[in-house]
Length: 260
Image 1 (cartoon, rainbow, N blue to C red):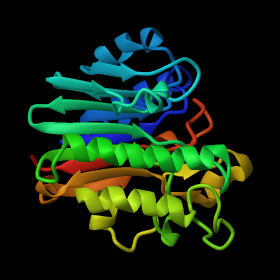
Image 2 (tube, one colour; image 1 turned 120 degrees about the horizontal axis):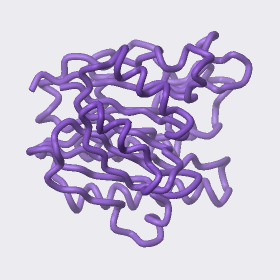
Image 3 (tube, rainbow, N blue to C red; image 1 turned 45 degrees about the vertical axis):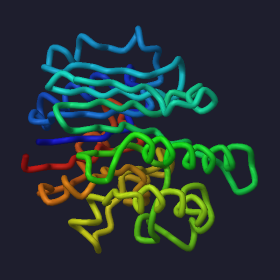
Image 4 (cartoon, helix red, strand yellow; image 1 turned 120 degrees about the vertical axis):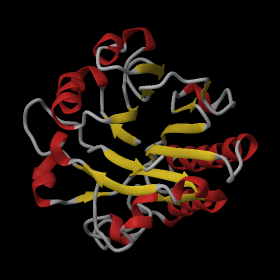
């Protein structure tokens, strides 16, 4: 089973690229989670992906944020948001159940520099998100949490730790918020298989960062322990990112392979 997360930075701007990717490069993806679809639910390009055999579940809003989960098998349960009217004004979390497997598709807040309103919003959101997980799941359940978590967890997850120290995504408070998610019962799939490998998932559009590999690892696939024993590979596919046309997202997809 192949499960992928991909911050597309606008599904309509990236549709042609994604369809090409799925037909030319990654034909065997079973579950595909998009973040930042940036489109109202009714305007999501359902038909393009249904033609490829996907069921499309969308939780989104006009212009920004928004997540969508595409699955080859039909979902038996769908949960929109995290059950909090304040935080769910921004469409960031979509949970789907496929057989006995839970998929939590997440676009965490970007945040801002320390002390700002967006900085506090991000940390408060993480607290509420952890409550949602704790109240609805057990570490013994089969759960995959994946998406753009907007935190580079370790120094090796950024291209220049000294230059980027205390910048958005590298502040210790942000890292601690993500560690609490892991401590609940999740394992970082990429680090589990590749503890010493430097691999990024996001590169700025400016300055040719993708060609210099000046990036950050902020997109993750996390899994509970009942699934980790079945994990066989995790990789970042640069096919969609190292190009000029069709214009890429600033993120690359991460793909996890499970032997189930």
